[in-house]
Image 1 (cartoon, rainbow, N blue to C red):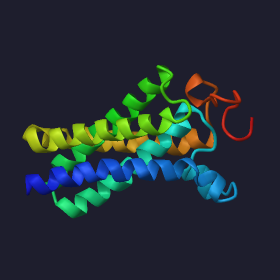
Image 2: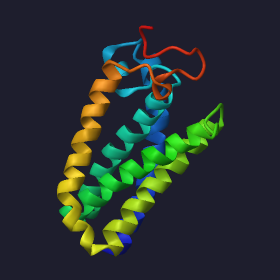
Image 3: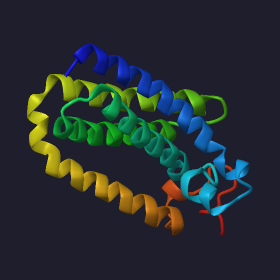
Image 4: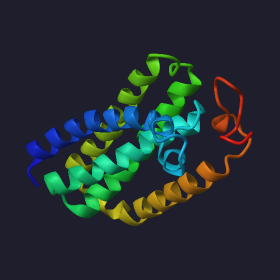
Length: 173
């Protein structure tokens, strides 16, 4: 693995993922409230909907980094899963601290993407033992996929799914 190319790819990936998140934030409105916008964009300002855009863009850009830098697959997949969860958890912490209102939302998204890609880059480049965590990482990715699909379609009535502006849950309540 060319470590220099990998680091540059991860850095560019963080920026590209942040831009992707910004675009996904407005996808629901841009598609005229279509089902595609519901599934991949943010339908309201709930922490879940905002985090959904962070996780989806992280996942897509990680796939691009995988094909561009060609790191060892098992190490990269395990490191990427931990990076994705790090990004999501960091973003939710920022939401809980109230740092995701107005223009700060874009800064928080960029910071979350940087944290996720930094964790992924460190684990992949500096921790060869991360390869052993590949089965756990596969389970984590499947769990995120199931949560993504089920909570997007049927958000529970918890604070994580409540719109910070209107107090609604999802698009139907």
